[in-house]
Length: 237
Image (cartoon, helix red, strand yellow):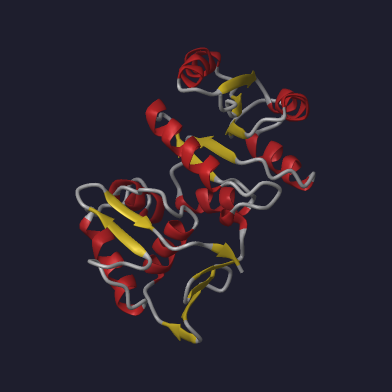
C-alpha cells in the first residue's frame, strides 16, 4: 500500500482548519495542523511533511517569514501559500521567496487538492522549485526570468511582456492543466477587465515565435474546452 503524503496545514483560523483538515484526510493525505508560524516551524521539524499549506496572514510569525526560514535552512519541502491578496506583484514575490504555488482565499477545497497533487508531482526532492529558478529551459526554449528575455535556440525572440509572463507561468507549472480563467487571474490579475480570449491571443503569439503547432505541439498543448498544458520537460538552467 502506497504511503500517504504528509501535509502540514498552517492557518490561524480554526474554522478553516477544522473543516479543511478532515477534507484533506478524506482525499488521502496524512494531515497535521499548526495554528501560527512558530508552531509551524516546530511541526516542520517534528512531522517532516511532504507538503506545507501555509497561510500568509498569521500572528507571531507570518507565512512569508515561515517560508523564508524554511528555505534559509535549505529545506525545499513544497509550499503552497494561502493569501487574500490578488495583486500579481504580491504573488510574484511569493514565488521568488521560494513558494511552489499560491491560492487566493476564499478557495474551493477541490481546487486546493488539485494544486497539492500537481505540486507533489513536480516536486524535486532537496532542490528548489522551478518557481524559484532564475532561468528555465525546455527543449530549444530558454526563458531568462530575471532579465525577462526569451530565447529560441541561440536567438533571442521578441514577444509582449504578457506573453513572457504567460510562458513563465506555464513553464513553472509543467504538465499541469491550466484553465484560461486561472491563467488570466495569474498573469493579468483577478480584477483585470478582459475575457479569456486574451489568453488565447498570447498563446498564439508564443506558438508563433516558438514554431509550435496547435495540432502537433512540442510545448503548449490545447486541451479542448479546458485550457492549456506545457508538455515539454522543464529544467532550471
